[in-house]
Image 1 (cartoon, rainbow, N blue to C red):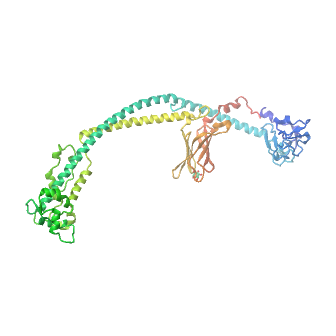
Image 2 (tube, rainbow, N blue to C red; image 1 turned 45 degrees about the vertical axis):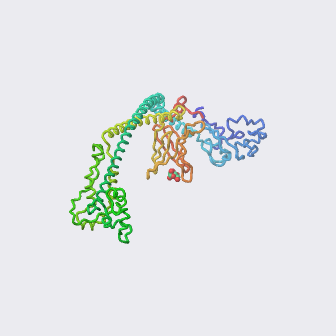
Image 3 (cartoon, rainbow, N blue to C red; image 1 turned 135 degrees about the vertical axis):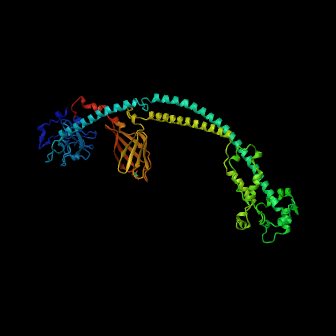
Length: 540
Ligand code: MAN
């Protein structure tokens, strides 16, 4: 029946603007066959059979309230508004005769003096208008949806082409994997040569250093011996050593002959004995006596061992150490120009030979060895091999991730006709006063604070969660960041047909449980777009 025809009201049934019915008032059309005035009435739950006069007599006989559909006698009764010309509706029967017009045809207020205007026609017109608007929206949206889906099929990242594209990527990956293995092998070989050369160089440096240390000690030892041997007879005697009171371990008493002898081990020692038994024992505490009358040469600054001296530019180990040089350097390291300086700088002057050796060693140790040309070349080759390996490695990983993403996409349930596939991984923002809400479809939903810029995950893609008959109406994002003293955050996105793709109307109806609407042409329905094209009127 069309809206217009169904709105025709039988005036013969009206009095005071309200519909007058007696026996069958409030009975749903589909149940009329159960109410036959010539027969006893059986409660609809089958619990009791009563004379038909008991129906709508304003006394509740049936437990299910079915004997009083047209009065408010049963607390659980239901009154059927026929609403001719619009949709019939059920209202609780205690609304009947309560002075409020609940049915658009006014049938619930038949007993009262209240005049209910029949608004069913008006409602039907509004419904029709909104239905038409919906139809137009869905029609336009469906066109847009077709365009989006068409452009997606020509887009390689779309799911329609994903299998073909996936095959291509997997082929590329295989080639890259092979290449990566080759580069890895080249790198491995280059690194073997590089490490061997570096190791060789390191050993050479260590040998040089050891020889240098030995030579340095030898020079110090000779120098100290010469210094102690004041009479030049190539022997250090007790009286010569006794002048060095700094060697007296017991500083309270004088440095006795016995104490000196116990250091020397005899009355005198030659160079060899001094070297093997005395030098190391006294070098820590030994200090040179001031030499006021001896003219001192200009102090030559102790040169830092140059990097060159550590490399193979020096032709051989033998020529690497210039002993003469070392003697000059060490001598000058603890000689000053005059005595005043000595007094003044005694503290500094009293630097021991041992510290001097340690200092030299330290300098050697802190100088990074410069590699010889051959090692440098091998290092360059290895570095190049590493770079090539990493270059291919990065390409390999990028393709691998693309494949993983595509595979993941292909397992996403993107709607009954795969219509939501174009928005997989696409992100949409909703700007609100305090936060930006960002939903990356089938992935994550975030709440981004505008003040501090901190991001809170309000849910990860979970599932479709619309009603049973329209599962694809709503999306669920769950397991977001846990609310303080509350549940993990979650979001329900309701999809709605719209011409533009946009998020609207974010809410937090319960703490940390968010809702938002996503308007998209992809949610537009061809069936709705064409429903009333076949008929200009909605049947009520
Ligand atoms: C933040 C936001 C709000 C949420 C509270 C809960 O302020 O995520 O949406 O209600 O935390 O503490």
